[in-house]
Amino acid sequence: PRCRPSGFPEVMSVPEAVAQKHVKAKVCLVGDVAVGKTSLIKRFVLESFEDRYVATVGTKVTKKTVQVDWKGVPATLDIMVWDIMGEKGFRALLRDAYFEGAHGVLAVCDLTRKDTFYDLNNWVQMVRKQVGDVPIVFLGNKADLVERVVVSPEELARMGAILNAKYFLTSAKTGRNVNEAFQILADAIGHRGD
Ligand code: G3D
Ligand code: MG
Image 1 (cartoon, protein in one colour):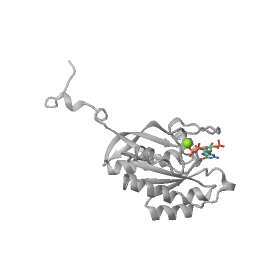
Image 2: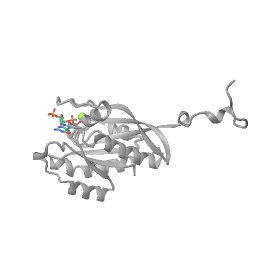
Image 3: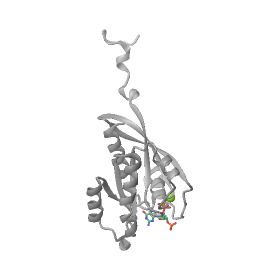
Image 4: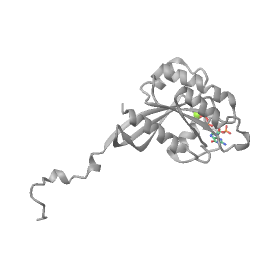
């Protein structure tokens, strides 16, 4: 028989990892049409990018698992990522179902279109009204289109400070900062732990 020091019951040798906490969170992407929401999700979940326009019909949910601290305890987090058609006044009924139970939001603008940046404010108001004070992260997307960028990092920083949101310059095309942005949001969700 294997030698076991006396006084150590078998249960104590179970590795801690087996008992790791497993949690789930709903994350919604918002932002105007064609800012890159669907492309960012594809990049994050499937690690790919298609130059072909793939319009989302209604809503779509995909899942990706990350590691987070859940109120200070290491945990596995399943992020349920919700995608929408970014119509400006998307219908009230759909809106309620879309935001129901959301734990965090990525609010996306297109760095080459100023109006999509100004609209972040409207999207944040809608989120606050629907789900209250959940963590929000701003993404200034299409950072790869360097010569066409018209929104500066300073502007994003200022808007972020006013609306209490962190921000990232991202590119769904190159992958720049995409995982980082999702991870920061996941960390913020885990920090709250609810
Ligand atoms: P949406 O889901 O927010 O409506 P999509 O936006 O993800 O459908 O993207 C709209 C268009 O922007 C697509 O191009 C897509 O390829 C492009 N796009 C998305 N993200 C980026 C990016 O980071 N860089 C660049 N250069 N393009 C991006 P088309 O041409 O098919 O309309
Ligand atoms: Mg889309």
